[in-house]
Image 1: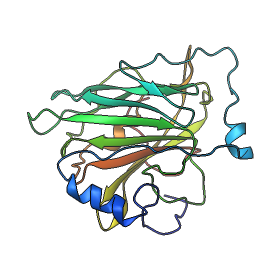
Image 2: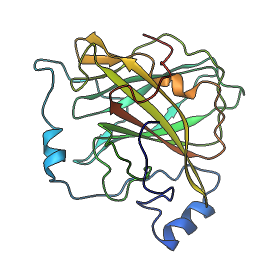
Image 3: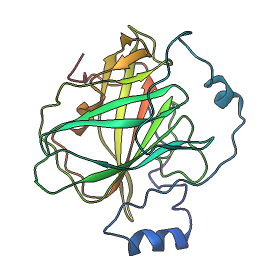
Image 4: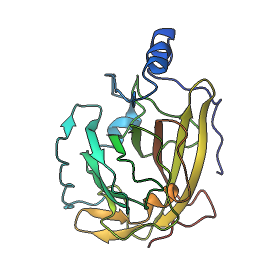
Length: 233
């Protein structure tokens, strides 16, 4: 990536020995559990405005729960042949995230948490020189591996995406005891939808990747910050 991150150690709910102990004790399950935070910075408030007036909000996911800091879906099932995950609707961010066929017939599930800030207590990578405009936390029940071909399907959408502008998708995995590792990134020019702009290829970052830990995060940035294009347009 064309920007640097200050350190590789996680922060948020892994900052205490107690939290780390809980993570180690629950090695067979996702430990993605958001905690509350205080909002109010100028940057945060600016993000609440709509870049595309009149855009419809994304539909809510089944079983979705919202707070003022984030929206979450506790459990979605991955299809062996690949498919679509419902991204929790939060402040005009949402839609779907495609993923490729998995290597195993094991039934994988995932917890997703949408937010527009790195709120206190979140399991997210350390800050870099550029600030993401959207965060999607990922918590798997096991360790899925993905084939290289992303299926067609509904896109990630937002009134904050500007059609014909480039956006970068970056995927991280959290390794217990080691910190965060960037697993892949790509950029795409946003398309149009009735819900604002759209990114159909955001799930490209899953291609040919096998998760070795339960938890990860996807971050969206403005601009093309890598030379790798997302597969779908």
